[in-house]
Image (cartoon, helix red, strand yellow):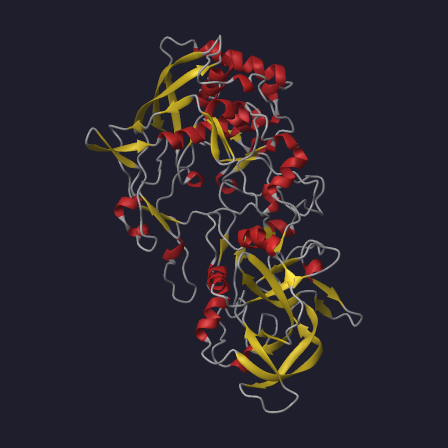
Length: 605
């Protein structure tokens, strides 16, 4: 069984093609066979489509701003028109060209992803790294406690001891709700500093076994006797609601005390830590945003760290913190082929579109796409939808998995793992767009959670846009590569996808070319001949096979396979107070994998 998904991958090639004329590319000295010219292009929306409108928006109100919801618009001869920006179109074409010309995969995120996987049967992957069993069979956490402090650009951790305290002893602030650490601090109105006597609590029963740690039986805000020590309450997130009278869910918080004199320099881990605790745009998550402000203001941040000789030093904001993987995407790309990250040699896409070195332009591109303007575009209705997808850390999809090895996953912990490749959304013609999808609701209030909903107004299928491609001093092979990327080598069944909402079926387009005075066929033939000479059986390679399959509108998955796995939270019941449907976790338990698109796609008429 394959994992259902609206996206799939073109495999990463273990061969990268570097044109031998790369060092001869110039804007001043033309090639002997260099071609310059202009090709008129017409784009037709084969499905409804949406590209976000340009402008500066207030983050708090933008989602309800009609201008923010519109398709991209700009003034043309004093009149507002719907526009497909040339930059958006160029990015789409460049990606196809990079794949087809066996170019480098280099636009990647350099940070290390992380995991917090309590459900995995592979104990060495997560739980076995952060915990161990004692001689009495009790589970002991390997995580140690400490205070993260900042001095200038440097970070260090001051270790300390920790004890546990029952939430019930802290008062009514800790009810049966599920909430993050930030909200706990806001709700708790008493002093965080307490005096207490730590008591050894051996073999204390917990949801995952018997725990071994120090426990606080009683405490006060003022010192009462000489046996008491001073500590500070530390709250971490509540992953699931506490059930009174049962210990199967989190029911205790922490107290940090007995600060050590030593300091552990963790400055080199800053980049990974901030990457793990931020979104794809580098914006800190709610908890890290809370603590980051305090850290920058000179306050200390409570953290837990793993200092085990068998693993790399790591730290996080909870005892079972998000553990950085041993390898990044960049590391695993180099396992496939170091050439993908070669900055000295340049692939076909770089030679055509240009490239930068040290964040400065080193070669200007020799092609330019105009904006594409529509005179007949018609908007549709407003769509409210949650746009999301599994993160690249979801290894059953983003790492190549051996179908024969059902009892083990390759992950970013494995140095010999291979990334799945270039992510793409199939251009299926029978995908129906649902304009009234079910929106997430709060299980208690039944109200829609608008914070995670995106609002936008697509344009209707059938709308057309006109623009042009200008090129200068391209060799026939280079022009052929560009033309091949535009229409997939003249394959009439293949179409592109552009803009937002691709998983919903939005953004499918066809492109018509007017090659007046230019021998386009000869150029494409030159490109295909060049690729066949450099890549054995290029047309039948896995890369071209999957690229064409995902672009062929007549190849489609069954509807139940092209949706995201469910991650919903049905209304709680007395039997299941934390009722959750999580197909992502269920796939992991069964060791399922994302199979190649061409394996499950069927031809439809």
